[in-house]
Length: 437
Image (cartoon, rainbow, N blue to C red):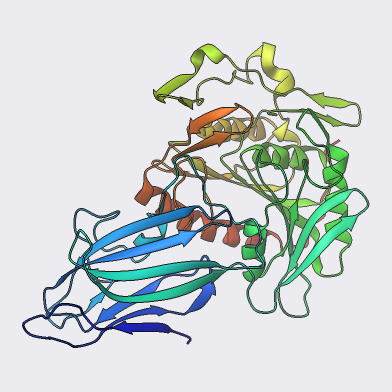
Protein backbone atom coordinates (compact mmCIF):
# COMPACT_ATOMS: atom_id res chain seq x y z
CA UNK A 1 0.00 0.00 0.00
CA UNK A 2 1.39 3.35 -0.98
CA UNK A 3 1.87 5.73 1.92
CA UNK A 4 3.18 9.25 1.73
CA UNK A 5 5.24 10.21 4.75
CA UNK A 6 6.91 13.51 5.55
CA UNK A 7 9.10 14.10 8.59
CA UNK A 8 10.22 17.28 10.29
CA UNK A 9 11.90 17.91 13.60
CA UNK A 10 10.00 19.73 16.34
CA UNK A 11 11.09 23.33 16.67
CA UNK A 12 10.76 23.36 20.43
CA UNK A 13 12.02 20.80 22.97
CA UNK A 14 9.62 18.56 24.84
CA UNK A 15 10.56 17.19 28.24
CA UNK A 16 10.21 13.50 27.46
CA UNK A 17 10.91 13.37 23.73
CA UNK A 18 13.15 16.26 22.87
CA UNK A 19 14.38 16.36 19.30
CA UNK A 20 12.57 13.14 18.28
CA UNK A 21 11.09 13.10 14.79
CA UNK A 22 7.34 13.48 14.41
CA UNK A 23 5.83 11.53 11.53
CA UNK A 24 2.46 12.03 9.85
CA UNK A 25 1.27 8.99 7.88
CA UNK A 26 -1.61 9.28 5.38
CA UNK A 27 -2.47 6.07 3.59
CA UNK A 28 -2.88 5.24 0.86
CA UNK A 29 -0.97 8.08 -0.77
CA UNK A 30 -3.32 7.91 -3.78
CA UNK A 31 -6.88 6.61 -3.59
CA UNK A 32 -10.38 7.20 -4.90
CA UNK A 33 -12.23 10.22 -3.59
CA UNK A 34 -14.89 8.11 -1.87
CA UNK A 35 -12.36 5.83 -0.11
CA UNK A 36 -11.94 6.02 3.69
CA UNK A 37 -9.19 8.16 5.22
CA UNK A 38 -6.40 6.62 7.30
CA UNK A 39 -4.16 9.05 9.17
CA UNK A 40 -1.77 8.38 12.04
CA UNK A 41 0.83 10.45 13.88
CA UNK A 42 3.81 9.10 15.80
CA UNK A 43 6.69 10.66 17.70
CA UNK A 44 4.74 13.14 19.85
CA UNK A 45 5.17 13.57 23.58
CA UNK A 46 2.56 11.80 25.72
CA UNK A 47 -0.46 14.08 26.11
CA UNK A 48 0.91 16.65 23.68
CA UNK A 49 -1.75 18.96 22.20
CA UNK A 50 -1.59 19.42 18.43
CA UNK A 51 -3.78 20.72 15.61
CA UNK A 52 -4.27 18.92 12.31
CA UNK A 53 -4.84 21.27 9.39
CA UNK A 54 -6.32 20.05 6.11
CA UNK A 55 -6.39 22.11 2.91
CA UNK A 56 -7.74 21.51 -0.59
CA UNK A 57 -7.79 23.89 -3.55
CA UNK A 58 -10.47 23.45 -6.19
CA UNK A 59 -9.81 23.84 -9.90
CA UNK A 60 -10.48 27.56 -9.69
CA UNK A 61 -7.87 28.01 -6.98
CA UNK A 62 -10.42 28.48 -4.20
CA UNK A 63 -9.22 27.16 -0.86
CA UNK A 64 -11.19 24.82 1.46
CA UNK A 65 -9.81 24.17 4.95
CA UNK A 66 -10.54 22.35 8.20
CA UNK A 67 -8.84 22.07 11.61
CA UNK A 68 -8.93 19.21 14.10
CA UNK A 69 -7.59 19.56 17.65
CA UNK A 70 -6.06 16.42 19.13
CA UNK A 71 -4.15 15.19 22.19
CA UNK A 72 -1.56 12.44 21.83
CA UNK A 73 -2.04 9.24 23.84
CA UNK A 74 0.36 7.88 26.46
CA UNK A 75 2.58 6.52 23.67
CA UNK A 76 2.82 9.87 21.90
CA UNK A 77 0.59 8.71 19.05
CA UNK A 78 -2.77 9.57 17.59
CA UNK A 79 -4.98 7.90 15.00
CA UNK A 80 -7.96 9.80 13.58
CA UNK A 81 -9.92 6.53 13.44
CA UNK A 82 -9.62 6.13 17.23
CA UNK A 83 -8.47 9.43 18.74
CA UNK A 84 -11.24 11.92 19.61
CA UNK A 85 -10.99 15.43 18.23
CA UNK A 86 -11.24 18.04 20.98
CA UNK A 87 -13.52 21.06 21.17
CA UNK A 88 -12.47 24.17 19.29
CA UNK A 89 -11.88 22.69 15.84
CA UNK A 90 -14.01 22.01 12.78
CA UNK A 91 -15.26 18.69 14.21
CA UNK A 92 -15.27 16.86 17.54
CA UNK A 93 -15.20 13.25 18.70
CA UNK A 94 -13.92 10.22 16.84
CA UNK A 95 -14.37 11.20 13.20
CA UNK A 96 -12.12 9.25 10.81
CA UNK A 97 -13.16 11.37 7.82
CA UNK A 98 -13.71 14.56 9.81
CA UNK A 99 -10.78 16.36 8.13
CA UNK A 100 -12.54 15.87 4.77
CA UNK A 101 -16.24 16.43 5.37
CA UNK A 102 -15.68 19.46 7.61
CA UNK A 103 -13.79 21.42 4.91
CA UNK A 104 -15.17 24.93 4.51
CA UNK A 105 -14.57 27.43 1.71
CA UNK A 106 -12.42 30.44 2.50
CA UNK A 107 -14.51 32.35 -0.05
CA UNK A 108 -18.19 32.57 1.01
CA UNK A 109 -20.90 30.83 -1.03
CA UNK A 110 -18.49 28.42 -2.71
CA UNK A 111 -19.46 24.79 -3.45
CA UNK A 112 -16.74 22.17 -3.92
CA UNK A 113 -17.05 20.63 -7.39
CA UNK A 114 -14.83 18.45 -9.55
CA UNK A 115 -15.03 19.56 -13.15
CA UNK A 116 -12.18 17.54 -14.67
CA UNK A 117 -12.12 13.98 -13.35
CA UNK A 118 -8.90 13.20 -15.23
CA UNK A 119 -6.89 14.94 -12.50
CA UNK A 120 -7.09 14.20 -8.75
CA UNK A 121 -7.78 16.50 -5.86
CA UNK A 122 -4.68 17.05 -3.72
CA UNK A 123 -5.23 17.14 0.02
CA UNK A 124 -2.53 18.80 2.12
CA UNK A 125 -2.23 17.84 5.77
CA UNK A 126 -0.06 19.69 8.29
CA UNK A 127 0.40 19.00 11.98
CA UNK A 128 1.12 21.93 14.28
CA UNK A 129 2.06 22.34 17.90
CA UNK A 130 -0.82 23.43 20.12
CA UNK A 131 -3.90 25.43 19.12
CA UNK A 132 -3.95 28.09 17.80
CA UNK A 133 -1.27 26.58 15.59
CA UNK A 134 2.32 26.94 16.54
CA UNK A 135 5.39 25.32 15.00
CA UNK A 136 4.95 22.95 12.09
CA UNK A 137 5.70 19.40 13.27
CA UNK A 138 5.00 17.33 10.13
CA UNK A 139 3.19 17.42 6.81
CA UNK A 140 1.82 14.99 4.21
CA UNK A 141 -0.05 15.00 0.91
CA UNK A 142 -2.73 12.67 -0.39
CA UNK A 143 -4.19 12.49 -3.89
CA UNK A 144 -7.86 11.56 -4.20
CA UNK A 145 -8.78 10.62 -7.73
CA UNK A 146 -12.00 10.00 -9.63
CA UNK A 147 -10.69 7.59 -12.25
CA UNK A 148 -9.39 4.33 -10.83
CA UNK A 149 -6.91 2.09 -12.56
CA UNK A 150 -8.40 0.58 -15.72
CA UNK A 151 -11.50 2.80 -15.84
CA UNK A 152 -12.07 4.17 -19.34
CA UNK A 153 -13.55 7.57 -20.16
CA UNK A 154 -15.25 7.70 -23.59
CA UNK A 155 -16.53 11.07 -24.91
CA UNK A 156 -20.01 10.52 -26.37
CA UNK A 157 -21.05 12.33 -29.56
CA UNK A 158 -23.63 9.82 -30.77
CA UNK A 159 -26.47 11.40 -32.77
CA UNK A 160 -27.73 14.19 -30.55
CA UNK A 161 -26.42 12.63 -27.33
CA UNK A 162 -23.61 14.49 -25.57
CA UNK A 163 -21.78 13.26 -22.50
CA UNK A 164 -19.09 10.89 -21.26
CA UNK A 165 -19.33 7.14 -20.80
CA UNK A 166 -17.22 5.58 -18.06
CA UNK A 167 -16.47 1.87 -18.34
CA UNK A 168 -15.06 -0.27 -15.52
CA UNK A 169 -11.97 -2.37 -16.11
CA UNK A 170 -12.49 -5.87 -17.42
CA UNK A 171 -14.33 -7.52 -20.32
CA UNK A 172 -17.91 -6.64 -19.30
CA UNK A 173 -20.71 -6.27 -20.02
CA UNK A 174 -21.61 -4.18 -16.98
CA UNK A 175 -24.87 -2.92 -15.46
CA UNK A 176 -25.58 0.42 -17.12
CA UNK A 177 -26.58 3.71 -15.47
CA UNK A 178 -27.35 7.18 -16.86
CA UNK A 179 -26.50 9.94 -14.38
CA UNK A 180 -28.26 13.31 -14.71
CA UNK A 181 -27.15 16.35 -12.68
CA UNK A 182 -29.10 19.43 -11.63
CA UNK A 183 -29.52 22.92 -13.05
CA UNK A 184 -25.87 23.93 -13.32
CA UNK A 185 -25.63 22.95 -16.97
CA UNK A 186 -22.56 21.73 -18.80
CA UNK A 187 -21.13 18.29 -18.12
CA UNK A 188 -20.22 17.10 -14.62
CA UNK A 189 -18.67 13.66 -14.47
CA UNK A 190 -17.55 13.04 -10.90
CA UNK A 191 -20.49 10.85 -9.85
CA UNK A 192 -20.45 8.84 -13.06
CA UNK A 193 -16.70 8.23 -12.85
CA UNK A 194 -16.91 7.13 -9.22
CA UNK A 195 -19.75 4.73 -10.06
CA UNK A 196 -17.64 3.23 -12.85
CA UNK A 197 -14.97 2.46 -10.27
CA UNK A 198 -17.63 0.41 -8.47
CA UNK A 199 -18.58 -1.70 -11.46
CA UNK A 200 -21.16 0.30 -13.42
CA UNK A 201 -20.99 1.44 -17.04
CA UNK A 202 -22.13 5.00 -16.38
CA UNK A 203 -23.09 7.75 -18.82
CA UNK A 204 -22.72 11.29 -17.48
CA UNK A 205 -25.37 12.96 -19.62
CA UNK A 206 -25.27 16.65 -20.49
CA UNK A 207 -28.61 18.21 -21.42
CA UNK A 208 -28.03 21.92 -21.79
CA UNK A 209 -25.31 24.59 -21.98
CA UNK A 210 -22.82 22.12 -23.42
CA UNK A 211 -21.36 22.11 -26.92
CA UNK A 212 -24.27 22.17 -29.44
CA UNK A 213 -27.01 21.49 -26.86
CA UNK A 214 -29.53 24.22 -25.94
CA UNK A 215 -27.89 27.12 -24.13
CA UNK A 216 -30.66 27.68 -21.60
CA UNK A 217 -33.42 25.86 -19.74
CA UNK A 218 -36.53 27.11 -21.54
CA UNK A 219 -37.64 23.85 -23.16
CA UNK A 220 -36.49 20.24 -23.30
CA UNK A 221 -37.62 17.29 -25.38
CA UNK A 222 -37.70 13.88 -23.74
CA UNK A 223 -36.75 12.36 -27.10
CA UNK A 224 -33.19 13.53 -26.41
CA UNK A 225 -33.10 11.48 -23.21
CA UNK A 226 -34.77 8.59 -25.03
CA UNK A 227 -31.89 8.62 -27.51
CA UNK A 228 -29.45 8.40 -24.59
CA UNK A 229 -31.32 5.36 -23.23
CA UNK A 230 -31.14 3.70 -26.66
CA UNK A 231 -27.42 4.43 -26.87
CA UNK A 232 -26.83 2.66 -23.56
CA UNK A 233 -29.07 -0.33 -24.34
CA UNK A 234 -27.30 -0.88 -27.65
CA UNK A 235 -23.78 -0.55 -26.26
CA UNK A 236 -21.92 -3.88 -26.22
CA UNK A 237 -20.42 -3.15 -22.79
CA UNK A 238 -23.83 -2.49 -21.16
CA UNK A 239 -25.73 -5.41 -19.68
CA UNK A 240 -29.45 -5.48 -20.50
CA UNK A 241 -32.31 -5.78 -20.66
CA UNK A 242 -32.75 -2.48 -18.79
CA UNK A 243 -30.62 0.32 -17.40
CA UNK A 244 -30.63 2.44 -14.28
CA UNK A 245 -31.12 6.17 -13.85
CA UNK A 246 -29.60 8.40 -11.17
CA UNK A 247 -30.78 11.99 -10.86
CA UNK A 248 -30.30 14.77 -8.32
CA UNK A 249 -32.42 17.92 -7.95
CA UNK A 250 -33.56 18.93 -11.48
CA UNK A 251 -31.96 15.70 -12.63
CA UNK A 252 -34.35 13.97 -10.23
CA UNK A 253 -37.50 15.14 -11.98
CA UNK A 254 -35.91 14.40 -15.36
CA UNK A 255 -35.23 10.76 -14.45
CA UNK A 256 -38.78 10.49 -13.06
CA UNK A 257 -40.11 11.70 -16.41
CA UNK A 258 -37.84 9.28 -18.25
CA UNK A 259 -39.08 6.42 -16.06
CA UNK A 260 -42.70 7.40 -16.65
CA UNK A 261 -42.57 7.63 -20.45
CA UNK A 262 -39.62 5.67 -21.83
CA UNK A 263 -38.83 2.00 -22.44
CA UNK A 264 -35.82 0.20 -21.07
CA UNK A 265 -35.65 1.60 -17.53
CA UNK A 266 -35.22 -1.05 -14.82
CA UNK A 267 -34.27 1.00 -11.74
CA UNK A 268 -34.36 4.71 -10.90
CA UNK A 269 -32.65 6.40 -7.95
CA UNK A 270 -33.82 9.94 -7.16
CA UNK A 271 -31.80 12.15 -4.81
CA UNK A 272 -33.78 15.13 -3.51
CA UNK A 273 -35.87 15.33 -6.67
CA UNK A 274 -39.29 16.75 -7.45
CA UNK A 275 -42.38 14.89 -8.62
CA UNK A 276 -43.31 18.06 -10.48
CA UNK A 277 -41.53 19.14 -13.65
CA UNK A 278 -39.34 22.13 -12.81
CA UNK A 279 -37.59 25.07 -14.44
CA UNK A 280 -38.36 24.28 -18.12
CA UNK A 281 -41.22 22.99 -20.24
CA UNK A 282 -40.82 19.30 -21.09
CA UNK A 283 -42.23 17.82 -24.31
CA UNK A 284 -42.61 14.19 -25.34
CA UNK A 285 -44.51 13.39 -28.53
CA UNK A 286 -47.90 15.09 -28.02
CA UNK A 287 -47.48 15.44 -24.25
CA UNK A 288 -46.34 18.64 -22.50
CA UNK A 289 -45.40 19.08 -18.85
CA UNK A 290 -45.27 22.70 -17.72
CA UNK A 291 -42.76 23.89 -15.12
CA UNK A 292 -44.25 24.17 -11.64
CA UNK A 293 -45.01 27.74 -10.58
CA UNK A 294 -43.83 29.54 -7.48
CA UNK A 295 -44.82 32.35 -5.14
CA UNK A 296 -42.05 34.87 -4.45
CA UNK A 297 -43.94 36.12 -1.41
CA UNK A 298 -42.99 32.88 0.37
CA UNK A 299 -39.27 33.54 -0.06
CA UNK A 300 -37.45 33.84 3.28
CA UNK A 301 -34.13 35.47 4.11
CA UNK A 302 -32.34 33.62 6.93
CA UNK A 303 -29.38 35.98 6.48
CA UNK A 304 -28.90 39.21 4.52
CA UNK A 305 -28.62 38.62 0.80
CA UNK A 306 -29.27 34.86 1.06
CA UNK A 307 -32.66 33.30 0.40
CA UNK A 308 -34.52 30.20 1.57
CA UNK A 309 -36.71 28.96 -1.31
CA UNK A 310 -38.06 25.75 0.25
CA UNK A 311 -41.66 26.99 0.48
CA UNK A 312 -41.98 29.01 -2.73
CA UNK A 313 -43.09 26.26 -5.13
CA UNK A 314 -46.75 25.50 -5.73
CA UNK A 315 -48.33 22.19 -4.78
CA UNK A 316 -48.48 20.02 -7.95
CA UNK A 317 -51.41 18.04 -6.54
CA UNK A 318 -53.69 21.08 -6.65
CA UNK A 319 -55.81 21.15 -9.78
CA UNK A 320 -54.38 24.43 -11.05
CA UNK A 321 -50.87 22.92 -11.01
CA UNK A 322 -51.46 19.37 -12.23
CA UNK A 323 -50.09 20.12 -15.70
CA UNK A 324 -46.67 20.07 -14.00
CA UNK A 325 -47.22 16.73 -12.23
CA UNK A 326 -45.10 13.88 -13.59
CA UNK A 327 -47.30 10.77 -14.11
CA UNK A 328 -45.04 8.53 -12.05
CA UNK A 329 -47.80 5.91 -11.82
CA UNK A 330 -47.05 4.94 -15.43
CA UNK A 331 -43.56 3.73 -14.53
CA UNK A 332 -42.77 0.02 -14.35
CA UNK A 333 -39.29 0.25 -12.84
CA UNK A 334 -38.04 -0.03 -9.27
CA UNK A 335 -37.52 3.21 -7.36
CA UNK A 336 -35.19 4.43 -4.64
CA UNK A 337 -35.80 7.88 -3.16
CA UNK A 338 -32.99 9.49 -1.17
CA UNK A 339 -34.50 12.32 0.87
CA UNK A 340 -32.88 15.06 2.94
CA UNK A 341 -35.14 16.09 5.80
CA UNK A 342 -33.56 19.56 5.88
CA UNK A 343 -33.56 20.13 2.10
CA UNK A 344 -34.05 23.90 1.73
CA UNK A 345 -34.33 23.80 -2.06
CA UNK A 346 -37.80 22.24 -1.95
CA UNK A 347 -39.80 19.73 0.06
CA UNK A 348 -38.09 16.52 -1.04
CA UNK A 349 -39.97 14.51 1.59
CA UNK A 350 -43.31 15.68 0.16
CA UNK A 351 -42.24 14.82 -3.38
CA UNK A 352 -41.11 11.30 -2.41
CA UNK A 353 -44.38 10.70 -0.54
CA UNK A 354 -46.37 11.96 -3.53
CA UNK A 355 -44.50 9.59 -5.84
CA UNK A 356 -45.38 6.71 -3.51
CA UNK A 357 -49.02 7.79 -3.62
CA UNK A 358 -49.09 8.00 -7.42
CA UNK A 359 -47.55 4.54 -7.74
CA UNK A 360 -49.96 3.07 -5.19
CA UNK A 361 -52.94 4.48 -7.11
CA UNK A 362 -51.81 2.43 -10.13
CA UNK A 363 -51.25 -0.69 -8.05
CA UNK A 364 -47.48 -0.47 -8.32
CA UNK A 365 -44.94 -1.71 -5.80
CA UNK A 366 -44.07 0.68 -3.01
CA UNK A 367 -40.66 2.26 -3.65
CA UNK A 368 -37.82 2.37 -1.17
CA UNK A 369 -37.64 5.74 0.58
CA UNK A 370 -34.68 6.64 2.82
CA UNK A 371 -34.92 9.87 4.81
CA UNK A 372 -31.93 11.57 6.43
CA UNK A 373 -33.47 14.12 8.84
CA UNK A 374 -30.48 16.48 9.15
CA UNK A 375 -29.06 16.26 5.64
CA UNK A 376 -29.21 19.11 3.11
CA UNK A 377 -30.01 19.37 -0.58
CA UNK A 378 -26.61 18.52 -2.07
CA UNK A 379 -26.23 14.87 -1.08
CA UNK A 380 -23.01 13.93 -2.88
CA UNK A 381 -20.65 10.93 -2.86
CA UNK A 382 -18.80 10.42 0.44
CA UNK A 383 -16.45 13.07 1.88
CA UNK A 384 -17.67 16.05 -0.15
CA UNK A 385 -18.16 18.84 2.40
CA UNK A 386 -21.61 20.21 3.10
CA UNK A 387 -22.48 23.18 0.89
CA UNK A 388 -24.33 25.46 3.28
CA UNK A 389 -25.18 28.19 0.75
CA UNK A 390 -24.25 29.12 -2.80
CA UNK A 391 -25.58 30.81 -5.90
CA UNK A 392 -28.79 29.34 -7.31
CA UNK A 393 -28.60 29.63 -11.09
CA UNK A 394 -32.36 29.77 -11.59
CA UNK A 395 -33.18 32.06 -8.70
CA UNK A 396 -30.37 34.43 -9.60
CA UNK A 397 -29.27 34.93 -5.98
CA UNK A 398 -27.56 32.88 -3.24
CA UNK A 399 -29.70 30.40 -1.31
CA UNK A 400 -29.24 28.12 1.68
CA UNK A 401 -29.27 24.37 1.02
CA UNK A 402 -29.80 23.03 4.55
CA UNK A 403 -28.16 20.28 6.54
CA UNK A 404 -25.81 19.83 9.49
CA UNK A 405 -22.21 18.89 8.59
CA UNK A 406 -21.77 15.62 10.51
CA UNK A 407 -25.27 14.27 9.84
CA UNK A 408 -24.96 15.26 6.20
CA UNK A 409 -21.62 13.45 5.94
CA UNK A 410 -23.11 10.26 7.37
CA UNK A 411 -26.03 10.52 4.95
CA UNK A 412 -23.63 10.74 2.01
CA UNK A 413 -21.74 7.60 3.03
CA UNK A 414 -24.91 5.61 3.67
CA UNK A 415 -26.83 6.77 0.59
CA UNK A 416 -23.86 6.10 -1.72
CA UNK A 417 -23.77 2.50 -0.56
CA UNK A 418 -27.54 2.17 -0.86
CA UNK A 419 -27.54 3.52 -4.41
CA UNK A 420 -24.89 1.01 -5.49
CA UNK A 421 -26.68 -1.90 -3.79
CA UNK A 422 -29.97 -0.83 -5.39
CA UNK A 423 -28.50 -0.82 -8.89
CA UNK A 424 -26.62 -4.08 -8.39
CA UNK A 425 -29.86 -5.73 -7.24
CA UNK A 426 -32.15 -4.60 -10.03
CA UNK A 427 -29.87 -4.23 -13.05
CA UNK A 428 -29.03 -7.91 -13.17
CA UNK A 429 -32.61 -9.17 -13.48
CA UNK A 430 -33.80 -10.71 -16.73
CA UNK A 431 -37.25 -9.24 -17.14
CA UNK A 432 -39.31 -7.75 -19.95
CA UNK A 433 -39.52 -3.97 -19.70
CA UNK A 434 -42.49 -2.19 -21.25
CA UNK A 435 -43.50 1.34 -22.03
CA UNK A 436 -46.66 2.43 -20.25
CA UNK A 437 -47.80 4.58 -23.18
